[in-house]
Image: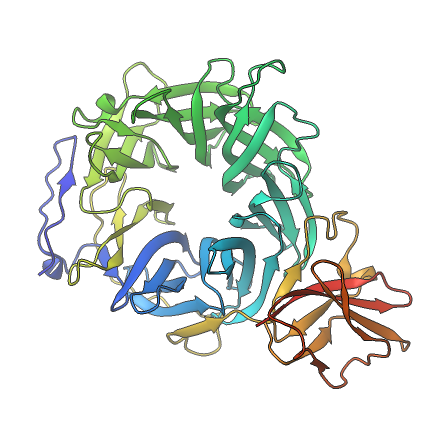
Length: 543
């Protein structure tokens, strides 16, 4: 018997909560693997109006974390699942649906799992959930990852890379990948050579606007003026076009000396943005939720700091992570902290649209005391409802965790399941089964300067190739994407320190594989030279 879920309501709405095994008509589900930990990371609505959700999964037996995808129908019943694995632990932070019925995603892969050092990576699955490509970004940064991914109008991909690049301080980069996963360019989000009063920008979300631009939110450290030696944490919002050109950047709160961090935004019908944020105070555990209205040019038109006591007299501290508009209401995801000595837990808040009036237009609050606070996501559905995903302890074994999904209306009442005769995954020619997807044959981007000029298309004037398998052990082969004519091809394999270790002066594409058994375990750079082409490079991992 599942434990009765505790819920907190502000307005007088009566909803009877029964044990979950009697909830035959309510949209409320748990998902989990036996003897494992599942943590919620992402959720989207798919082309067939199903749901694709999941997060990190880790077995108690080996603790190697991987990514778990779960496809659901409209009522939340599981259709299939895939575990995304490789030779190294991975974590996916963001996924997006693609025009061909597949998905693309991005996150972090831990090449050196002993030191738990992460690198950014991205991948693409087809409409059947099978791997098309995976790309790994090399960097000297200690903890680097890909935070968000969106699809552009030309079916390429924009990705935010946190703690990336070759500046003296950590930075966020915006990178574009083509349809095959090759990097076209990478640009700093806030260039420290231009913005000298900012340090360590860090992205949270990336939103495609109705005008075809891309709104990025996050945090950065700003000085009040160039003479200051202290940098203060501020929310920031920045707009870029599809080529990565900056349209505007708004560091919020400098004039008011506000400390904080920007999270998700939603675009209104008038082209303005409402953004969720977090307000810090100089000491103590107290935090407030923040709602900011920006116009299309990045000007802050309105803002409101929401105090915990405005939503519930028992709330000590809270802030806003996401914001969605459902008709005439705003729904926000937030952690709820009842007192300084307790753990926060996830909550969902419903407000009227006139949030900048003196009195907060509170519609409802629903707090989930038995769930985990920060790992909390809401997604708006095509029927103008919201699905909330959280992490909670496994009801049958308290040492494990499961995913918990709940569908709600604007008043945060649990939605009911409905008759469903829909056909799912119609773009896949065969039924999709549960299974594993193994990341291999990586594209490896050597560094931030690789193809830094958007006009340098690798399919036109640069030798592009794949190393197979990658990672590999004794022998590898090179698969070229496009190469014309005959002529000598030279293969050089270097250490990461620049030492030439293997030279093949007359390599023929399609010939025998390359013997790398003499190389110690590690990362190597393979260089390909051919007259009439710019040199091509790929990194190779020997295990």
